[in-house]
Image (cartoon, rainbow, N blue to C red):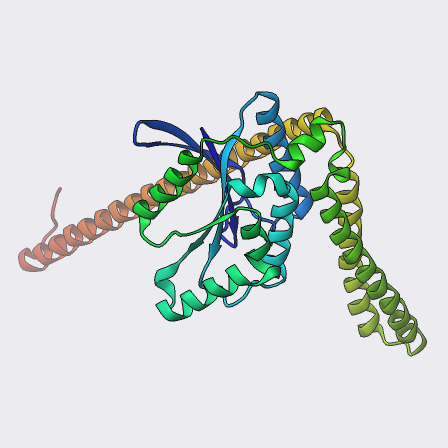
Length: 324
C-alpha cells in the first residue's frame, strides 16, 4: 500500500520512498517536493513528480491516499502556498480529492488558540481548503508525533480505496506534460513571468539608452549586469517551456539521463572532496614532519651549545685544552 505525502513549505527536495509497518500492514510513504522550492523551478519539480507517478501507474501500483502537509504556524497561505495548493488540485483531479488528507503540522510552534483560528480559516475559506473538503478531503492534525501520524495512516487504510490521479490518466492517454492540467498551470505561471521579464528588459533598454546619451559609464556597467542576469532568467523560462513538451516515454528517458548525470556529478564531487581531504592530510603530515625535524634540529643545537659551554668552562678551570 502506497501513500503520497505532498508538503507545503516543508523542504523536501526530491521524491523519496520510505517503508513503514502499521499494525500488520507494510506500507510505503512517497515523499514528494512542493511547488514552493526556491532552488528548483516548477518545471523541474513537475517533471520529477510526474515521472514517478507515470512509472508507478505503468507498474500497476496505485496510491491508497494522499497526505497534504501544511504548517499551521504560517500566518496565511501566501503566493507560493496558493500556487502549491493549485498545483496539488491539478495533479489530483476532482475524483482523487476524496482520498486526500489535509494535515496541519507544527502545532507546538504557536499558541493553541491562534493555531485553531488558522485551522478554521483554512477549512472554511473557499480559496483555501473548503472546496477540497466539499469533495471529500478530510482534515487531521499532525500534532502528536507518531500517534497522530498513525491515526492518519489508519484512516487511509480503513477506506480500502485505490486512486488514479488526473495527471496519470492524462499522460497515459497520450497527452504531453504541457497538455495536462498541472502542465497548463505551470505554463500559465511561466507566461506571467515572461511578460514581467519582457517589461523589465524594455525598461532596462531605455535606461541604457539614457546612460549612453549621458555618457554615464558606471550606470552603463550596472545596467549591463542587470540585463545579463535578466537574460539568463528569460532563457531559463524558455527552456522550462520546452521541457514540458514531453510524453511519458520521452519524460522517462530524459529523467533517466538527468539522474545519470546527477549521479556522475555527485561522484565527481565526492572524488574532489576526497582528493582535497587527502591533500590537506598530506600537507598536515608534511607540516608535522617538518615541525618534528625543526624541533629535533633545535634540540641538537641546544645540546651542542651545552657541550661547547661545558668545554669552555673546563678550559677556563684547567687553563689547558680539552681533548674530546
